[in-house]
Image (cartoon, rainbow, N blue to C red; front, top):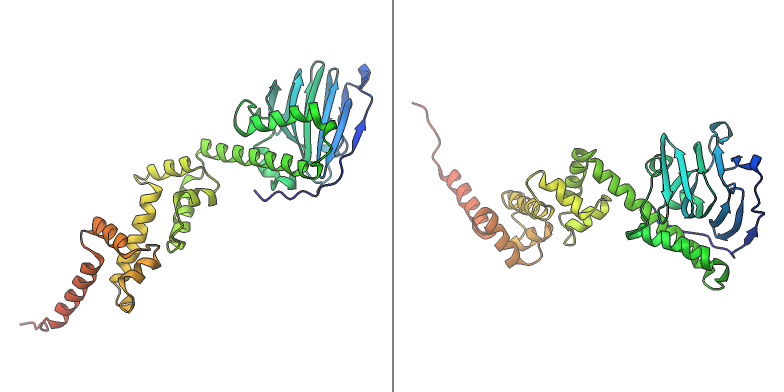
Length: 326
């Protein structure tokens, strides 16, 4: 996910006739940002649009023949206020009711059905604003998102608030679009991460990537499990889970890798010019006594004793008489 950066502008409001004739119940969507028939109010906040839509039974269809070859994807996330919303896309379908949310991407064929009289709030925004690719959104579309807790509840309640109060907001308009886009991006990121964790796919590759990341940054004293999890877009709990499968924990693995590097360097004559404290610092141990205690707990001797024993062994090897065969 990328940082959300929204160009803001003054809000505009447009009103439409919400009276629908029976033969208008099926709407063919020809433009990626086309608004559904029956839109009561459309408020624009920079590149984000908030729509309040109501009407009778209605279908919106965007067939593949009308898609531009390289058109920009427009994401729509909808929250029903009255009735229900059915979304069909990417070989899936979902039905949202009450506080639930549902999403579709205008860059691919879709169908949205309101089977009875409805009222809903929708946010429409460019896919690039979320830092998402078409491949990413295939995992997000036509799925019901709970609006009862967490980020889903925050976004669901925001949409209700827009329906009730958007026309009366006279200050802070320039910031509201960015807030809506940022909250939506956070919800998408959380959902993608949760889906990856639930599937368990790619764990061996992920583990190798994590191990390489840790080894490259052993000298960083701020390296810790939460930093590793954040850099790999997984939760701390999931990071602990995949290490547990290898009978380890992230914190212990980081510590043991640091100690192993220190031991290797103290066993190498090329590092004899470095003090024990300097060797510890090269692997992220700041504080000689702390480093010495951890090393002794791991290897049974202090760093000083280990280096001294290596020197004694080398001296003994040099003092051994040459071997003569008889």
